[in-house]
Amino acid sequence: MQRKSLYQDIRKIREDMTQPEIIYEDEAILVCHKPAGVATQTKRLGQKDMESILKNYIVGKKRVEGSTQPPYIGIVHRLDQPVEGVMVYAKTPQAAAKLTAQIKNRFVGKHYYALVQLPEGKHSMEEIGLTEKGVLENEIVFDAKKNISSITSQKTKNTKHALLNYEVVAQKGQKVLLDITLHTGRHHQIRVQLAYAGIPIVGDVKYGNCPAEQLGLCSYRITFTHPITGRKMDYKIMPENEKIRMLLETVKSA
Image (cartoon, rainbow, N blue to C red; front, side):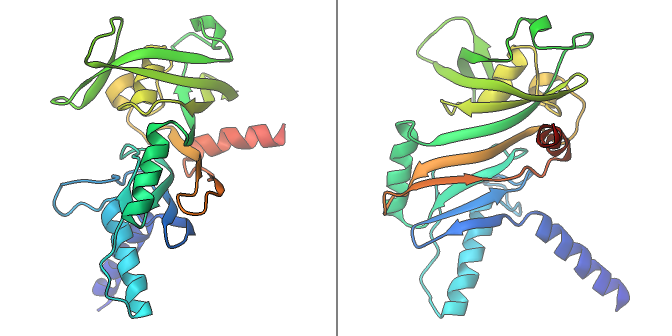
């Protein structure tokens, strides 16, 4: 009995670790904090993703309310599986269509913290030819078979324009915390652009050849217009990543 209880406790802890925090909810939308390690959507059998987790959450609420209406979750934007961050989901097809249009027209504000690693022997952005505040603009090509993006110098029908602004927030040793405003939502955009610029994200094995650890990337703020009321919505979260939090604390205490 004690062993069974222990297994139940461990399973409950694991489930709690992957449960998103619901920040805001009404009849049309749901805003939540996606944990790192949880996919936005997946076809892998037995793997939890945000879509299934939120559908189960809505089903539970409807049972309490006595409703039998099937749950609807509209995915209007995505975050990579290892990335944590604030996300908005639609609860009706109408809300999904309007939010998708906002994203397509770049009316949704997306802001990230990126913890990057300076090259060995370098101690400032200036030493690698980057300013403390600037713009990264590249052409990106996506290889679907390998699920990887890369920077190319030539613009073709297969490339996508990638644009972001960055600003240094804090630095400790060779680790630098950047505040990033994303203007285009390309596949792995922030990761590939920063790695190409010579400042790969901490923990990014795929693009930065970094030691494996929690990816130092968090979508900490999102702004958009409510698809029904037209009200301006603005939501921020505090990253769970301890290394990012530590650098943010140095800014607060300064």
